[in-house]
Length: 322
Image (cartoon, rainbow, N blue to C red):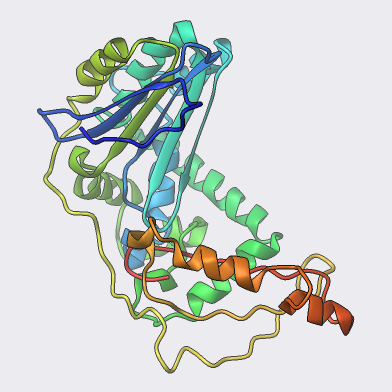
């Protein structure tokens, strides 16, 4: 348990705990006025752990977890149940996390948790859905190719040191998830199941439940449904902090965008800031650099008709570098 500083206007109830059987850290939040219930689980492993010969594997695994479990083997049973009870689900894979979440009507929450928890206990990873889901990932990547932010993100990643994990292609496509592994005599389904076995462990996961149910009821559901998740006593993956060295910096890049835009961006590495969440030094710097009052940088640029907007932010911000 840990103490929380709450607003005087916050009428919700909170309880944090670890499941003794597998060391899963949990938070349950009771809100009697909530019209829906929801849950979110972060596996705390992401694309930085992708093998070089199967780039996009963490993202592909995220897709495959939705396609049936031993307890609920029908492929679309999870999404069908949520849809029929006013619910919704999604997931995303970042460099260090894979996050799964859903919401549903309050009276269907317990059964939805039964389905959700089985993702992390007994997934099927069926052969019949493997190639189809690779094609779904490939389609997602094709869509991203027409988005300037995705193009810029991958360009910056590709400029990192070639041996650094950030330089890999994190989304995945037919080439990286099918053709490349096959050329090496590797089975992508076997690689995915190996990745799941090596990186998904209850002791590094985080789980949150939110609903109009009592704290006692939600804690009981968590303990009964999520305690079977295997604890492999893993440590969260780390990577070198020097993603960009002298040879990778001091470069001028000219990019032709998809949209009609003209933008100047200055990017530079900084030490990791995830541990500075209480003082938030980069928030202070972003506020000062992005201020729009008289005497600000933007005010001076506007006075010369050189800019319409200015912003400052940290991206990506990871545990080992930013």
